[in-house]
Length: 182
Ligand code: ATP
Ligand code: MG
Image (cartoon, rainbow, N blue to C red):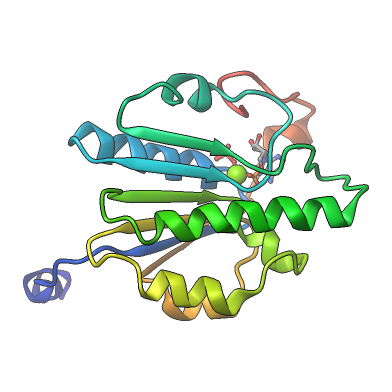
């Protein structure tokens, strides 16, 4: 059954991949896939829509790579947000850049990390994002991470992986570790 379907899969085009769910492994999966693509000589860009607490290992490893452009947006944009108008401005600035990358066919793969929160908090409108994704260069791959994806994005995605939180060391009392959490 699977073999028959593989034989029938002859189309060659970029895919939109959504990595969602409450379990650990969304961003690391996206960056792992990016490493795979860059290893083949492809060109990549990352937009981090939410700036994490620490400089991550992947940022340190990839930021100076000649095939990777890494953008950390949402400076001062934290989980415990204080200033909503500042957050919205940061989200819009990040989207402005994302929209540009989605028109640039020299990028083979784009990672929009934690983008889903922009919709959850209504910092960004979904419609223009969907339009830009649909009109992107044919061979361009896009990966979007975040715990909850808006329905409209799921409707146009090619691959959706939902990572379930079955267990997490955090709840066993293990603190966030360098090299594992960031
Ligand atoms: P990772 O970056 O490790 O792939 P993620 O992108 O799936 O994780 P996020 O929702 O972005 O997860 O959360 C970021 C941070 O929270 C990471 O340090 C991650 O290890 C941690 N984390 C993820 N899921 C859980 C969970 N269910 N309980 C506690 N901490 C978690
Ligand atoms: Mg993440």
